[in-house]
Length: 144
Image (cartoon, rainbow, N blue to C red):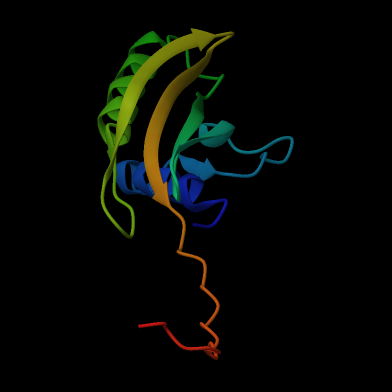
């Protein structure tokens, strides 16, 4: 599994929901980027061993919506965008199987909407190749 696997999946889900408007970034947008825009940030990844070659991975995302500052009241717009983001982040389609969010919450700080989504993925590492067995020469006989 690539390192940006879940980041790409979340970004694609957001793009599919908003149909490329507003612009969605996975890299920090340049200063002076056109508002409104969405920024998807992977905050943290955690991996814990489960059983032999199995691991539990936890992905933590912050999807930020920066509204247009020139508009007057942004409360209704932010509330609508929050609901749309929560709906599209509930289950993320991936190449293997869809991944369901374990928790989603939102808050608005300084006029920027933050939607936090957490995902749990069980990862199975490939079985290491075992060396071929060598032949054994038997010396001696069994007493009767």
